[in-house]
Amino acid sequence: MKILGIESSCDETAAAVVEDGRTVLSNVIASSLEEHKLYGGVVPEIASRRHAEAISFVVKKALEDAHCTLDDIEAVAVTYAPGLIGALLVGVNFAKGLALASGKPLVPVHHIRGHIASNYITGDAKPPFLCLVVSGGHSHIVAVNSYTDFEIIGRTRDDAAGEALDKAGRSMGLEYPGGVSIDRISPQGDDAAFTFPKPKVAGAPYDFSFSGLKTSVINILHNAQQKGEDICIPDLAASFQKSVVDCLIEKLEAVALERGYRKIVLAGGVSANSKLRAEALEMCKKHGFELYLPELKYCGDNGAMIASQGYYEYLAGRRADSSLNAYATMPIDKLI
Image 1 (cartoon, rainbow, N blue to C red):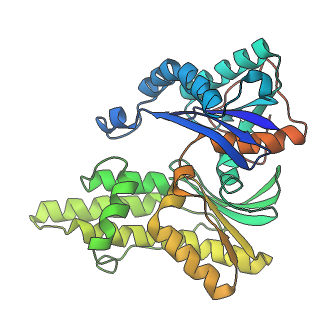
Image 2 (spheres, one colour):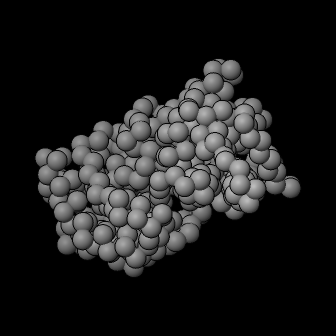
């Protein structure tokens, strides 16, 4: 069964064809990242315009690369939430038109569910498992009970880990995306050079809070500037990255031990972070857990993960009609 997946939640216009939820036949991405670097972050209006310009070509190329036509496609899956609303609407409206014109079923896919599905196309991960989803806009610990049954155990109360890394990187004067730049220069620094607080959320031991860490970086830089002191940026980057990763791994480990999970999965853009991957591997080795990591090319937004999750949503009977809308926010466990 071949599913066409369409993704446009941020700055990547992506489409892919995946067979039976596991085999990637094509995966095409057009990114406007270089343009957004000029502004130090994603500009929603620019992202929406670039999606509108690229989406027709990207979908056509995905079908061509998979050596198939719409006649060979069982259903059209599309990201409808969460994300930048204007960007999402481009993908949703294109998918609705394509499904209507071709007579194919339309399958709505939650973006974070898609990120989790990136582990289905790069390995043999099968639910149930415990998943840490970390991206620019989301930080969740999720119990994946089945391919379509999710329970949020922990979440960020303010900034996501990826957002905190990006903003900290920008404060340090590093190139956007800041998280990638921090990961790149951290091996040159001493991760014990700076000490950061360990945020705690009252009454919610598995929730995250990263805004305080981000503010600490800004305060360190401002204080040094006011005193005329120089800061070793690699040291600061390494120390900050370690503090973020420690928060993530400590809570993930605590949930796994308390609830008896033996299978651990990482997903989302920040799952490409080398420090996070290394610490997750070390933690899993210590306890004898199985660890599943998406290939680096599937950590970021892509159409293959949407097509993969779309396959399982399709089997579960999820369908949408021409009234499907896009939503900037939507919990992973509460769908339309």
